[in-house]
Picture 1 (cartoon, rainbow, N blue to C red):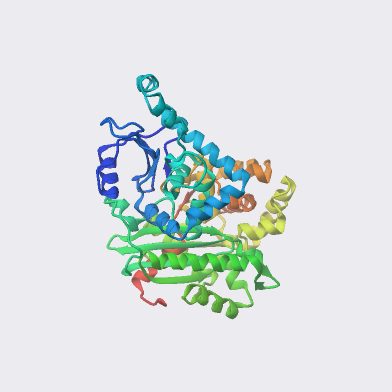
Picture 2 (tube, one colour):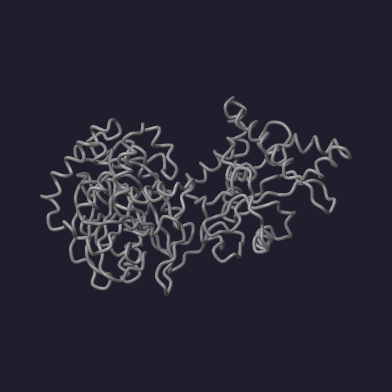
Length: 512
């Protein structure tokens, strides 16, 4: 999702107005501008001009939600009683009430600012009552406390990053695995903007994979098309499953968080029409001694059998996903730096990977081992440890990427690519294929080591939940890239999950 800025609105073009009309089923009120767009570039939130030129009554709602997906999903929340529930939250929480009052003031200020100087002067002189009303109306045109329309509150929050109720609505949508940056299921990719129905009918070519990783639970929903894969939705929930690995067993709050995430993501995949859902486990799951118990709980939560991938299988599928995603037909090296392990694969797309390696050097694992969130001295300990391990564990791989491209996948790499570009909102299209100079990776390690954990959390481009592990991950990525002889790493959004879905399209051996 892209935002036009705190005060700026992007002018609405003819295509934008046609899209909004298709969503509303009528000609829209005069649009002052587009506040946010989804990842397909379609209007998500528009700002209405407060005074229609036709002389019609003033438009009470400033920010209007026009994303078909979000319109439907917010209506679902309203039908579940969340208007009243959030109203009670605001009434009983002084901080929430103060945040809503600030949102109302900001809404009314922008509404007046959208009028030109002549309009403001004329209105104050000719219709002071209306001028006062424009300055008194808050989010959704309400006058006074209370929650009026969740659509308006979410629109305000998406446009300005402001407002307690809008933030809570966004949280509720995320808990239901609703992507706030757009989805193919609403037709936004082709500009049709059709309204949604309760559930998409299962489509034979639509599949999904849910991955239980050491640091996060992720999901990818995609269609098989003649050109390959077309991504429908992507999701990531940070659950830190690896933290629950005590004495070889997975359990505790980390496991419960991960199971809840897997259940919600599998439900979401089926809801948007995935006919098949594959659930896989990687490093933390394959190391767990209570695998049979875990498999039973995963099946109960998701309705799908848990498939535990070996390190080599993980490397093989990741290699294919990354190479297909970047359109790299020639030979290359792919590194998957996850929370519990790092996988390496070398080969070509037509012949597949010829060499595979899996090592327990993931960002979460080493962050916990060396406590890299405390002092630069601990980072030096991690660096020295890696330098001692590399000659023993990776001797055949030294210089492997001197003449070959090095493609890197995983949260560390995508975060660093977003941080390097200073992205306030994560943009997969800006991250995928981005080149990071290896010397800049070393500079990032130094910069991160000099910051407090809170300072790291505030860095643009970094998901706050990833702050405790990003320094360890960046250190591993930097040292391994140097060992491989790379000058630059290419970041890929396509990884293990894309490789699994690509394999599923060629071999229909999935559990339903």
